[in-house]
Each structure stands twice: as structure tokens, then as C-alpha cells.
Amino acid sequence: MSTTASDMLGQPLTDVEASVLALYEQTKSILQRDDLAPCVRHNLVQSLAALAQVVNDLDLRLEHLYDLGA
Amino acid sequence: MPAAESPFWNPKNETMPRDQLAALQLVKLQRTVEWAAERSPFYRRRFAEAKFEPSQLRKLDDIRRIPLLTKDEWIRAQEEQPLFGDLLAAPAERAIRYHLTSGTSGRTPLRVLDGTRDWQWNSEIWAYGLWALGVRPTDVVYLAFSYASFIGFWGAHYGAEKIGALTIASGNMPTEARVRQIVELGATTVCATPTYAIRLGRVAREMGIDLAKESRIERVVLGGEPGGSVPATRRLITELLGGECGDFAGMTEIGTNMVVECSHHPGGPHIVEDHIFEEVENPVTREPVGYGERGERVVTSFGRGMIPLIRYKTGDLVERMPHTSCTCGRTFDLYRGGILGRADDMKVIRGTNVFPAAVEAIVREYREVDEFRIVLEREGDRDEITLLLELHPHVTDDVREGLCERMAAELAESHEGLRFNVVLADAGSLPRFELKARRLEDRRPQHSGAAS
Image (cartoon, rainbow over all chains, first blue to last red; front, side, top):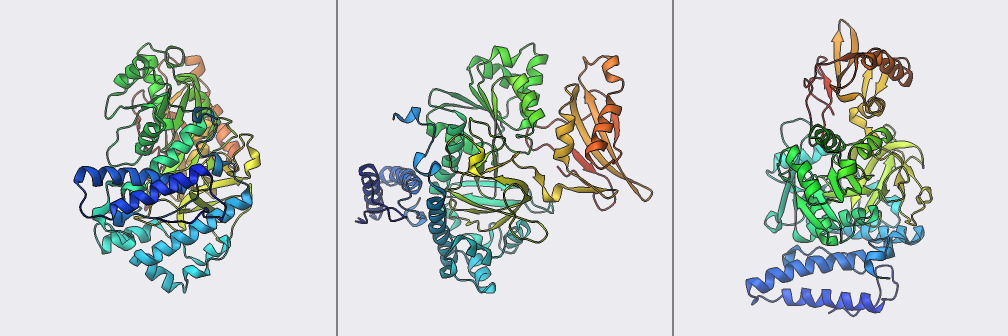
């Protein structure tokens, strides 16, 4: 999980931003596993895509996630 | 502040000071270009040919080191490596959506793919726009659109769902059925092309329904073709449907909207600048033009990663204005009058430039006109331009008399004296459109086909 405490412009994170970023990184981390049931993997992919949009909108991360299925 | 009370979908970025916004765009541009260089063979080759490396992007202006991307090049890449070409930056099997748009030659369509995250981004930009126009979770959003492969209002559907509005897909219903649903389900927001919004209103009147009085429509989201910022067109739509109009513009190549109109109606849509980088260039010299000057839009998307879009030459003509032209509080610049036309729509008739959108702006001032068509023909060595008008059946003979002459005079005045042949067509003889209207027919040798 990333420990970077700033956004893409170097600004410190708010509490909400830090929480959202932690969720995002945690979801990515779970999707690295190869033992997930289809219902877990594919619903998490949907969640990750939505979280990726939140961290993008909040200027925290801009990443492409095709390798994780999103 | 509770979310529903926020005037902005993304307050952080929509009100960001311009210097910070530029810094954000630079970071996103660097990542987008690095991604393309790393994953897309097309861009890797292209950058190498231009002796460009992503590390050269130190300020936004450095983007001009990258060559423009044209639709023809993109289609050629797809023809050489069917079906999707080597612009792809991820395997096609990662995609969840497929859309297409017509090509320039008519032979090969342009095909695009989106992954799950790409599609989230697509609907997100629609959500920015729908929210800016006033759509909230309590709204009922009606999509008067046939779905299928044309991207059209697909993103609006998902954007409205994301907001939490009741979202109604009308699919390939007949217009009469759509009118009934709009009334029965209490639609507050209707998404349609300007042409089809007018048709909805007129068909409703023929059914004895005045949507402006008998529906709950509060706003009409216009997209899919130019015209959403033409004042006469907007007045007519508001008169027929009720509600305020909002002009949105996007393209299949990008996957979503790039410009969205807010509820302050500043005379044009805002650019969604935290997700899309727009340049405006002189179409001949390719030099950047300043605020208020007309030029061609060149677009770079920070969104879709499966097919990176860097410096795409859109052909759209625009006039960029500073964000201070609007009182809504957004720091995003806007395009005065929306998409003013297309560089390749321009026709030269006896030395005079004619844009279909400019002709439409005049025709729409005449409420008696139900439909129209522009026909270009060669007579001997002379080009002629004819405007066919279909009037509403209820137009009386005294109104009919002299209308063509009045309109011809007005058109000539706005086109350096060019004479338009304005003639009446029989009722029901001109084609109607649901999606992109094609009202210009160029019958001159080597110009065959409908152009717009």
C-alpha cells in the first residue's frame, strides 16, 4: 500500500482523500491475488474502476488498470 | 455541504485557480504521454519519427512538439492491422465496450474500445455536465436516442445513473411512444440531438400534446450535432418542449463529452479542463490563436487509456473564451457559441465561404419552416446553392407569400451578397433525422454525397 501523503500536485491529503486512497490501494492489492472467486474478482474490478475515478477526480492518482482487469 | 446542494460535481477541480489547473494538466499530460510511449506501438513509432521523448514535456507548450493525429491516420492504422490498429495500448480482450463512427472515406468506420475504467471515466465527464446543468438524484432523465453502436448518449445514460437519477432508455421506440413516455413518466430532463428535440416537440403537437405545458421537462440536453448553441434553435426547442437547453459536445474518438454547458448559460459550453486538454489553432498556419479568435480544436484526452488520444485534430471550429465570461464560479474556459462548424464542412460557392451551421442559424429564425435542405449544384461553370424549405401545413398563403424572398435576402446579406435559390418543397418530401442530421447535399462533380 502506498504511503505517499500528497496529491499529484504535492499538496497534503485531507482525511477523506487519505481514506479514499487507502481503499483504492487496498482494492488493487486484493486484485493481485489469483485465488479470487469470479464474484469477488469481477465485483472488485467494478469497485476499482469507480475508485480509480475518485482518485483521478481528486488529483491523487492517474493510472491505467488493464493489467488488473479494469 | 450536502452533496446535492453543491453546484459543482467536483468542487476541487472545477473551481481550481488557473495556475494550479495548468500544473495538474501538465502532470496528467506527462503521464498520458508516458503511457502511450510505453504501451502503444503507434505512438512509440510516431514519437521516434518526430524525435520526441516524453521527458521533453516540461511545460504545457511542449505538447506542440508532438505531431497532430488525424482521423485518416487512425483509420489507416486500423486498415493495416484490423480491426483496431496499433494505437491500442492494452489488449483488445480487456475491453468491455465497442463503438464506431463513420470514416472520412466512407469505406472503413473508425472503431474504438473502452475498458472498465475507461467507461467509468466516460460517464464521469457526462456527470460533470449533467450536474452543471442542474440534474440531481431526484430527476427523471429520458434518453431519446436509439442506442446501438453510435456512442451518442450512451455516456449520458451512465452519467445520469451515476448521479442517481431515474434513467429511462427509449431505445428504438417511435417518436409518438417517446412523447407519451416523457409525459407519463414525468421526465424532467430530455437528452436528444437538436434536430430530434424539435421533431419530438412537433410530433407531440400533432398528437395534441403541448410538451411545454403538459410535461415536467425542466431541461433539454443537446448533443450529437452542432446547433445546441444556436439561439434560434434553442428558443424553438424551449418553446416546443419547455425547459432550458444545454449544449454538450463530444466525439466517439474521445469517448465522451469534452464541453458542457452550465445552468448559468454563458453563451457556450465549458471545457472539462481537468480531464481534457484543448488547444485552438489556426487551421492553415497551425499556430495557436488567442481568446475570441476562431480556430480548430486539437484535443488531448487524459481519460481513455486503451486508445490514447494525443493532439487529435478534430476539425471543429471554435472560439475560446476565458472562464470569467461565465458567472458560475467554474475556472474552466468555454467555447463561445459551442462548436461553430467543422473546418471540412465549409463550402466555397462562387468565392464565398458557406457553413451549413450559419445557414441553419438563419433558417431557424423562421418558425414557419418545418424542415430544410441545402443543395449545391454545378450549372455550366457556375456553382448554385439552393435551399429547399418545407413549411408547416398550417402556414397560410399570405405568410407563405414572400417568405422565400425574405429569407434569400437575409442569407445574401450574411454571405457577402451570395444569391441563394430559396424554394418551397412539398410537405413530407424532405428527410427527417434522429441522430446526426445531414442537410447538405453536394451534387457538384467530385463532391457527391451529403456533407452535414
